Image (cartoon, rainbow, N blue to C red):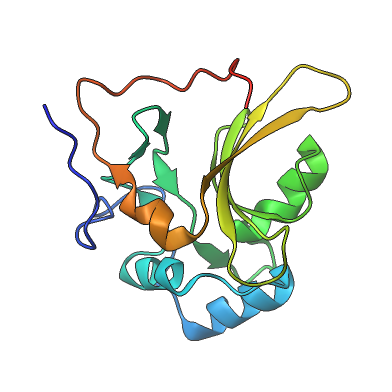
Length: 168
């Protein structure tokens, strides 16, 4: 079975248990202000279709499987969820401070990487390492979010789990 790549349609699984309330312009502005970054326009477009949730195109490079993508959630109690929880996880887990988390499972993450400034982030994969001096391994997946999207696919027989013991 050949992999089917994302071409700009049908990214989200509808009625996903992971999705948040429909996205409003105010939430985008508040998220960018709190995170002190400019979110990629194509990411915002996806969130306007559905504000996070399970995705149909979950495989990257036949090895990394991103089951869902976070959206933006700002609830009435002031608690921040979705990508706005990035700061919490960064502090708790010792992740790099210049990222915005798009997906994660406590040991592996896909994130927007703002290491070079508050605009035009690359997309990186982070995995937990068990070394005292460097807890997280990092691999750049794409130089920008658009290229990352173009490399996502639905998988096929050749898809296999990422081997996080590799040295990059």
